Length: 545
Image 1 (cartoon, helix red, strand yellow):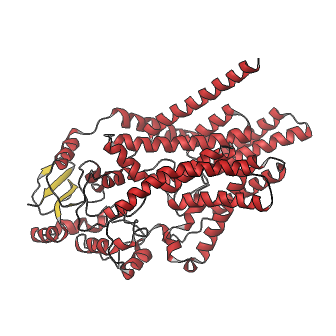
Image 2 (cartoon, helix red, strand yellow):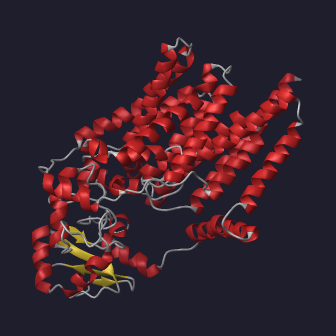
Image 3 (cartoon, one colour):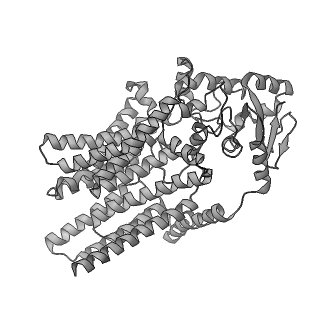
């Protein structure tokens, strides 16, 4: 009889995991976007070769250690397509998010089916606590930030599930994907273990399991570090004045002065719920409390850092500022609402047991109140319009995206254009704009002189500022010391389109000779004074002889 019941539980568990995997697969197609980590894979694997001069771009990847780049490079070398590698990154991130939320809710609510449904709802609605200096990302082209949120969420779920071995492995992997966030998670967990050790609370089993996980997770980290140190390239001397100019005038994230009051208040409310859990469930074993203490310490410490940085930014060393410490307060943004919901249900069950109230009535009343709040206590007048908008934005839009990403083929003219670019026999750089930078690398397999989408790598690689400044000033003719708009962290097309169109053939040839430029790729509606080598109707290619 016991064996039969156990088999039913196992079947139910397998069905739930199958549902999670299927949902993750479908959602990964629906939310597909090419990943920046694949760019690193193309470069570190040597599939796209960058010239020796002006290594402001290649230095990001050869002198910036990130395990994601090496994993992407290995897959690309094994003939996985860029689409496949990007999809794998998105799929594993979404899977991690769902599992993290599901594990947390399963532990708190003790109801698998409810936890599964609520996990799907959070992924579909993309509900989170809010954005701070760094946005909260469910799915994004920014692989590193996306993994930061998903793996942090997964670690919380694993700690709640008492899977300390796997939590240790994932924590170490996170260090390789995002050094700052990974180290934060690692030292927060170690801090909890140390505190409990000081107070002589037995946690030997959880500590040993976590330590073994760290050792296992360190294997790919060590291998990637060996590859990294074997392939670093020379660095230019640091231009301190130019770097300070970038930090003061160009950088986006570190110049946000807004104090996100609502986010901090919501975090405070979350901390109150966490505190209530600690108080009312203090008799739980240490292994059952690790996740809640982890969230308490992480969210409280990061909030304090955030507030101090906003009030006293000049007291923080530049090295700390470059690491963007205010991003840490955003780590709990996705897991916060599931946590609050789970604790509320756990408290309702406690009240039901203690005062002999009907649990179904209490839970029904709770969800009616929750639905009423959503329906009537918002600025929007019509609840039905708001529900329709959510369905349109979160579900119908994803269905269209799924159809587009899976069934709609790329324009033949564009395909022919990028095949032509790929087959070009050139050994210099390509000048691009914001629309063609990524396409030139990913589809044309050619190196750009600068990625117009972002130059916010500079805080992590300050030695590249001299070349970046020279390119911005001499090719794009933008005054580095006086950008048209501050704090963009990018080069906007509107700043230089007319400049490009007014350059003479002689100007272009001088630039080509000085910066080792072999070609220019721009949108078709840009009219520059050079002869077109090839066109698709959307893009034009200009090749220097």
